Image 1 (tube, helix red, strand yellow):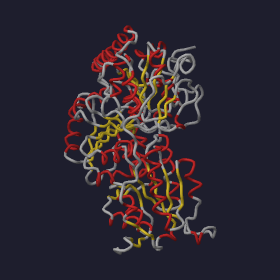
Image 2 (cartoon, one colour):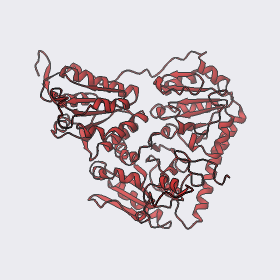
Image 3 (cartoon, helix red, strand yellow):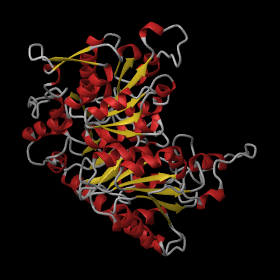
Image 4 (cartoon, one colour):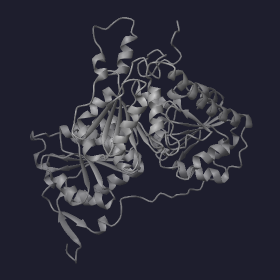
Length: 575
């Protein structure tokens, strides 16, 4: 490096790796292009490259990393079909509002339109799924383009894409020390000032039966436990979307479970009686608002707080606050007086929390009297055996959905949760678990997944063995795609001889791999010992697959009529 100009010439991937390193990125996921320049460059920059076997899994892993850490997850792939393989991962990252950067190779400018090998208009493919997409055709634009992409990913909370065409590989790039001097981040004020007469505060003061709903946007916004303080101040129940779990301590007596599709029956009356809903860091997707009373968003105002205006659900009327949830709640607490909400409302809220735990104990007691093993008991065994700060990474299938039922699984005492978005991309949880583990290496990470999802991500089991340092897969084996089989079985007229499950596969195991340990739960009597053995191996740094044979009828919505995307709750037995 010249002392006068303080610059050096670097090829594209070397420059990209330097920018990532200067931004604090130390881990990337992916499958590099044939030329190996990306692999070489990251190695030279001291960045750990997690070599994946499938590009979709690589983006899932980067998304899991981003959700857990709150930092940018990076995936690196080649060109053409390598990019199209990432599309499902980008869809999941977008729906999860996860800050993910996808870097890919690309056809050189001099060859575009000539039928070059693996030539593809990659920008057109990924642009609908990302917040920013760019192709760098001149070396002088590489550093500012990468810096822009990182800023957007971090602060607009979503995936971004940058293509590095082959013609950049040998072109000199002016890489200055100044361009790498500081991380690519913008200052976000910790505190904001909310006027005392703001529309949101007026609505809060007028409410006597408020409800708080926390979404995925609050995951890293509650270090000071302000959300719990606001609930106590308002006397309000706290509900969570599936992606918002872990943001609040679910041991709080104000916590009443998940919202929408997963609302406990004991808590349904709270939604019927509320006179104000406060939605923090959520887009209010269909799953979160399923079966809401028609009054909500009409007569009952919905106060929404989001950092991106596009995330506001304009279906619901009420004040909207464009700001981080944490700073907003802190500003509200400075203005709101000591709790003056309906005292009967607060009593009802606490009674719901107590009733949920009583129902949980009653359920487990009833199941214990049965000779058959139930998934709820598997969750109970995991709760009893694993450390309190475990993170459960879930899918959204027929039977792993039991983990969405509070308090069968509870994010209390430091426990965490990572789930797929409303897109419920099959295989996300099984693959993302590795990203979550690498983002939180000191914590136990459990992938709680069905066998269909596990099979889709299974190609990267060797990746988990090599890099995770200990990961537990709890695989619920019903023989295939249970949700689809239930839909098929409930049709009045059979559809050919099709089947989505294979009864013979219920007792299947994962492929035998060096470094992979497997335990199969034999029956109810062996469950506790099997879980303890699996965790002992996992705590010692091994990757463990706990195979759990299950019955299709052991489903969270088993008593409900299948209704396509959603069960027809309460319709079972209707004429």
